[in-house]
Image 1 (cartoon, helix red, strand yellow):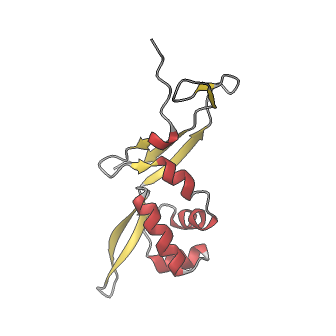
Image 2 (cartoon, rainbow, N blue to C red):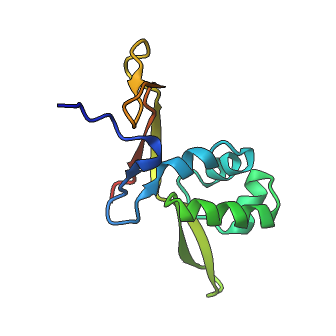
Length: 134
């Protein structure tokens, strides 16, 4: 009987409670971008409007909106509504995760079997996403 290999990164999705699943492959790709990392750093644990994110991250607002759309699509950011003291409703954004952990495999000297069973595909890559607690 053939042993089932660990799930590939492309098939990995982590659940964030009752929210949409986090697309870990997309998240990993997004975090390779310096502007995305600056936006995630600027958000921290707060819910912020795009204008404030742009100021804190020192990134143009069009870039912030594009990256927020990508992060929302990946399930990492969600829009919220804020009511200002003057009564105006403003869209803000917050992270849906509070951390993640990347592992390149626990046995680096042991090659993993490729999905087609014909040879080595290297160490499995897994990405664990930690959701905010309610």
